[in-house]
Length: 194
Image 1: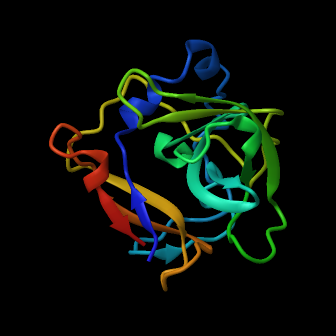
Image 2 (image 1 turned 60 degrees about the vertical axis):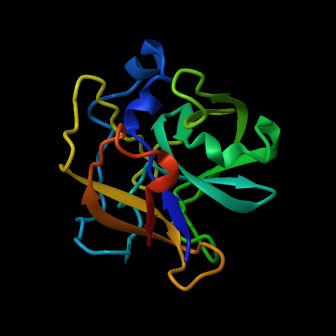
Image 3 (image 1 turned 90 degrees about the vertical axis):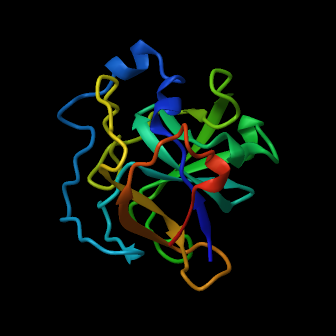
């Protein structure tokens, strides 16, 4: 079964500049226009439910998930780039629900630069897209709230691709969990199975 490492969101914010954050339109980010969320562990999602999810691909194969934070940038874990941090080796796929099969709303974008975090260790990466992501009901940025703290134990959602039966990742899934304290746990020991 596919494993997903969860890292503290705070480390991702260190990679964003005030200019890139100001490009976000509060009326666009974080909106889920097509469906209502359901509770459950490893629940398959419908199109448009997680419009900011990105499939990071190398050689046409899904390697890691990422998050669209504005039209120009995707954030992910730096661990994803241990084999190569060369931008031209990577493609970002947005609007994708399944790794195998038809995805009528997906868009593939080239990466021009990958910036790995040097503030908090090798745990966050920002991918600069060659062209702006075309926003639609299936492709929207997540809201990045730099002024809000998420207390330990508060509810959060995790999403990622998993077949649930081992082997290659296939279908985007979600589940609800709780925020953990990054001081008490390293990113290597936080593992969820979808």
